[in-house]
Image (cartoon, rainbow, N blue to C red; front, top):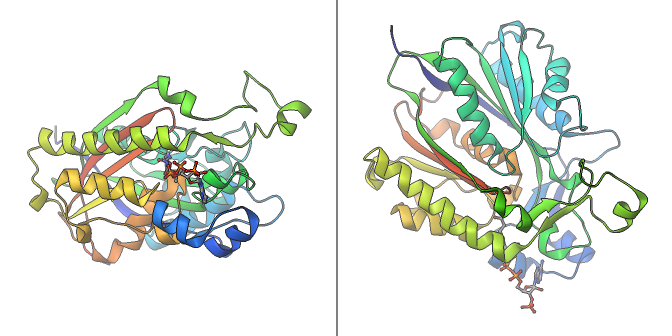
Length: 332
Ligand code: UT7
């Protein structure tokens, strides 16, 4: 039997219009453009405004434009996975809502939450259905309305996050292209450093949890930084060694965009030059499940068929991992 690989055959991003700059944030909390820029590399982020607007409203335009540009009919999509930590509601899955909004009727759709590693976890999961031959057109969404769980009175955390929606199409190929290998990891002991205290089954919403601001992100920045900087670099080096890839073989590193200092440390450990690293954190901040596809979308017209690309992420859980893929098409 011919071996099937899963290849990304199209990518699309979508960001809302409103731009929250460092200067605006400096009027909301005790911070400055200088502090945010030097500590994180972020200058601005996009925020979804308006009543009744959720993560599916960030994702649906991305999926719709993806289907149009790849000439895919919604009826042909047989699976949709939504990577998110900010679902529209506890249930049903945001993936079901997105499918409904874009007219996808024949798909098996569900959500996947691995915090900031959600997109790479979902990409690996979707690729297995393609490789097995059971599914032929899989849409992986990476979308988060982080502004819905950010405490804009907490200066250490509110400066980092932004909102965005993205989508990629995965299809089978018999060529030596697409997702070649992956290493995915998790360690639940890390949950103490990064979580949302209330709103789940342990601590359902109550007046007290709202008053205590427990529905927002709780992050011990320094502790998370320490784990992120070592684990993301370690796993990126591990996937290179495992596949005998040297830094000169790699066209691009696509790191999760949480902090420019974490990105630079990872690139240094891999022996990769700055020009080979996709970085757009300055314009979007940390969009959680959307960071990696948002980079790929912006670099889409520079990528060539056969380019070796390493995707790497680290997030709450803790979760982390790396994917090696060979880009499957030339600029369109
Ligand atoms: O997305 C996946 C998971 N998340 C991450 O990977 C995020 C990892 N962590 C980080 O990126 C960084 O830890 C932060 C950006 C969150 C914070 O940066 P930091 O360099 O670790 O700052 P810090 O918490 O060590 O604070 C240093 C100082 C403190 O003041 P003192 O105690 O030295 O007087 C803070 O109170 O900076 C102060 N500070 C601020 N000052 C101005 C903290 N936040 C701010 C702020 N503006 N926004």
